Amino acid sequence: MFLLQTMCPFSTNIHFDYDGHYSKDGDDYEWIPTDARLYAISFKTSSLEEITYSLLKERICRKMGIDPFTKRLNLGYIPLVVEPTRQSYILDDEDVFVYLTSVDREQRRSILHVEDIEELQIVQITEQLSRVGESSCSRNYCERESGYGEEDNVGTGVEHDEHPHKKQKKSRL
Image (tube, rainbow, N blue to C red; front, side, top):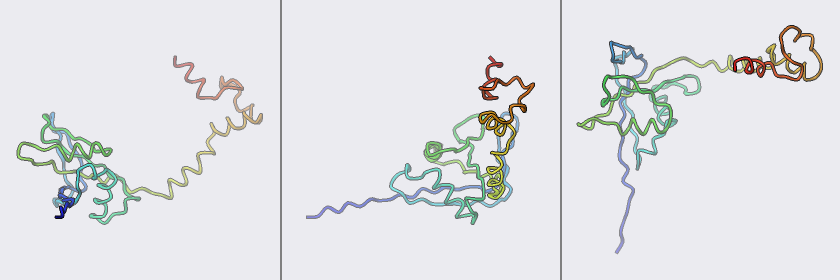
């Protein structure tokens, strides 16, 4: 006699509103959608722990037809069980699990809100990283370490063997 055991995946459905913003109204916060459409994605998993933050963002991007490497999205919701109402942001896997398991008495989950913050500019990020070595603070520090450019520090109160930021920290105490 065989005992056939199968993993019976269950379906977790998430309804989300894409592109809008939160607004404060008295003590409460409300979501103001840009688009009146509601979207949905479904996960077929054996447990809720399999739905991670990165997987959730990836599936939202795929559904909306956007490149996850060029968009910055904020995920949030207004919990049904919190008074006064206020937004709660999803920042990691634990927040995703809390969102998925937070339901009201009728087993309803909050609508997920997806804020489309900005389009990332990969070219600009590369340019900014390449300019970091050219800042005056790093140049002066490197020159000081090599013995060049000591005249740049005249009148700044920086000792020859001391990093400029360490001097500031001492004066704050």
